[in-house]
Image 1: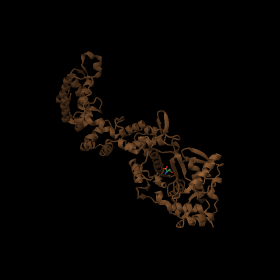
Image 2: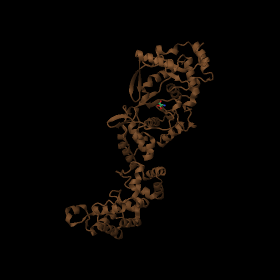
Image 3: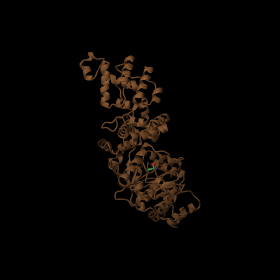
Image 4: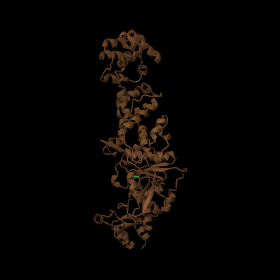
Amino acid sequence: MTNKDLADLIFPNITKTIEDYEKMYPKRNLPEGAVVTRFAPSPTGFVHMGSLLAAFIERKAAKDTNGVFYLRIEDTDQERKVENGIVGITTDLKNFGIDIDEGAISETEEKGLYGPYIQSDRKEIYHAFIKHFIENDMAYPCFCSKEELEDIRNAQEKRKDRIGYYGRYAKCRKIPVSDAYEKIKNGEKYIIRLKSKGDFERKIKVKDAVKGIVSFPENDMDIVIMKQDGLPTYHFAHLVDDYLMRTTHVIRGDEWLSSVPVHVQLFEMLGVKAPTYAHISPIMKEENGIKRKLSKRKDPEAAMSYYHEKGIPTEAVKLYLMTLANTNFEQWWDANKDKTIDDFEFSFNKISKSGGLFDVEKLMNISRNYLSRIKAIEFYDMLVKYAKEYDNEFYELITKYKDFTIGLLNIEREQKKPRKDYAAFSDVKSLVWYMYDELFDKHDKNYEFTNITDKDEIINIMKTYVEKYYDENDDQSTWFEKIKDLSEEFGYAREVKEYKENPDSYKGHVGDVSMVIRVALTTKSMTPNLYDIMKLFGKEKIIKRIEKLEKNL
Ligand code: GLU
C-alpha cells in the first residue's frame, strides 16, 4: 500500500496533475518588474475602509508597473457567505474607481484567463494539489474526533506545551498508510493535514515589502489543509491560487503576518517560489486619547456607504487612502496640484509600518481641496448624480437650471486660490439655497444685515441702486464704481480709507453699502463673489428679490 494508493482512494476522479495546471496557467507574459496583485475578500457583501485601502494599494502597485490586478473571492468558509455578497464587493470597488483587470464580476460572471476566480469553483484544482501532497508524503488524513483534539489540547495546557497538532501530539501522522486506507474505505470521517517538516527551534527570515526583514520559528504544525467538506483551508487555497494565478505580491492585512511561516513552508514543499509578502497595518482610530483599530461595527466611517450617502467624492476618498498608503504622498500632492493619483509613483517601502490614524477631518479637508480644483462641469455632473439619489428636489432644480448651476459652481474657481466651500455634495444645497427662487421662497429668512439695519434706508438704497445704477452688462470694475457712486449719494464714503480718516463726515462706507446689497439679495452676509451672483441673477430676479425683501423685513 503506497501513498499513491491512498491519494487515488481519496481523489478517484482527479486525473489532472500539477504539471497540467502549470501548463494551463503559465507564467504571465508581462514586462520586467510588473507586479501581479489580488484583492481576495470573503463574499461578505461589502468592503470596509481597511480592505479598500488594501485593494487600492493592490490596484495602484499593479497599474504603476503595467502588471495585473485581479479580484478573487475567498469563499472556502461557507459560513461567511451572504447572498449577493460578490456583487456588493464589485459595486463598492466600482464606486471607488478601483477597476479590476481580471476576476469575479458578479455572482456568476468573471473575466480573465487565470480563473475560476471564486474559490468554491476551484475544488478540483485544490484536490489535484492535495493529491500531489499526499502522494509525495507531504500530507495525510487525520481521523481525530473533536474529543480527541480536546484531549490533546488539555494535555498540552497541563504540560505548558505549545497548543496545536504537531510532533508527538500529531497522532494520525503515525498511522500506517494501509490503516488509513482501510479507515477511509470503511467510511470514517477525516480531514487532510500537512506533514510538516519544520523544526520550531530553527528560525526563518522573510523579507516583507512593508515590515522589512521578519524572523519566525519554522512551522512545525500539521495544519489542516482540507476540511471535511472537501474545501481547502485558507492556507492551502492561498498556496494554490497565488501560485497558479501567478501573483507576485501578496498584499494583505497584517493579521496574516503570523501565518507567513506556514505559507513559506507550503511554497517550499511544492517546490516553487513564494510571492513577495506585503503586510499592511490596520487603519487606526483615536478615541478619547486611546488608539484602536478602525472597526467595521463601531465606526460608521469604516463603511463605504457612509461616503456615498454624504456625497464625499470617491476621488477624495482615494486621495485620502493614498495619504494612508504612502506617507510621502501628501507633500507630493501639495506640490503638484494639477496632477492626479495616477501620476504619483507608489512605493512599498513608503507604506506606514505602524498603521495610519484615520482622520475624518483630514479626509474632509482633502475633499474640500479636491472639489475646489476640478472644473465646474465635473463638479456639476457629480452633484447631479448625488442629488438624483439623495435629494430629488435639488436634483430637479439643478437640472432645470443647469447653466445657472454650473455658473454658480464656477464662481471663484479656476484661479490660483479657488474657493473651498464644499467638502461634500451634501453641503451644496445648504450653502446655496438662496440662489434658487424655489428654495428661497420656502426657506426661513434671517437677513444678516450688519452695520446698516434701518429698513427704510435699506429699501431706499436697493431701489435707487436698481433704478439708477445697476446695469447687468457692466464689467466688475464698472459695477463696483457704481456702488461707490451709490454710496456717495447716500452719504457713505466711496473708500474705506476716506471714511477712516473722517468718520464723522459719513454714515459709513462703500463696504457697508455692498453688504446691504449682498444681504438684501441673498439674506447672507457671507457669499461667493457678489458681482458673479448678480450676473447670474440678472436684473429681473434682482428686482424680485427687492420686492421679497420689502415684504419680509
Ligand atoms: N480572504 C482573506 C481575508 O479576507 C484574504 C487575505 C489575503 O488577502 O490573502 O482576510
